Image (cartoon, rainbow, N blue to C red; front, side, top):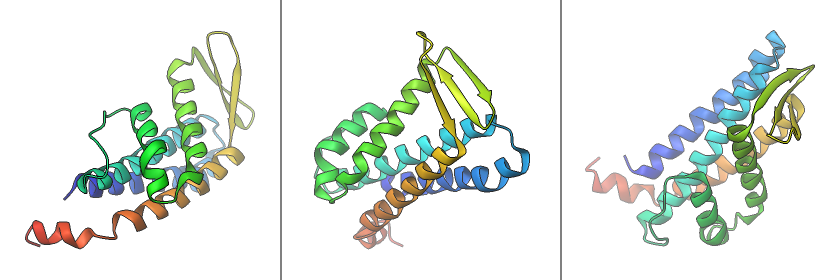
Length: 165
């Protein structure tokens, strides 16, 4: 299995997990802490989706090697793959997911409030995440994944022949 196929599979797992938590678990439990897990899975799913596209392009030598961190992947994706595959409209969404990831990493305080999960930075600037926000993010992540699956499966038979399948 190629790296892009593994990344694509991981992306699907993360996006499905986020979908299940948001549509099944959260409504049943009404625990705002679940929203942070949904966001974490969405971020991981989006990162793996971008990784799948980048590894696919790398397999065809369309892009140079890249570092395995979200900022590096986002930069390369924005400057090469997004334009190549006509998916530049997803770049702001991916950047927003990266922003949430960075905010979560640097967050000094995180807490639940009503129907939202709140992250505070060291200056106590607050960013709340609600189920409604996450539903929009989930829809966007699914659209990005579907486009990535379409892109990365175009010439997939080439790799299956090389493996002797």
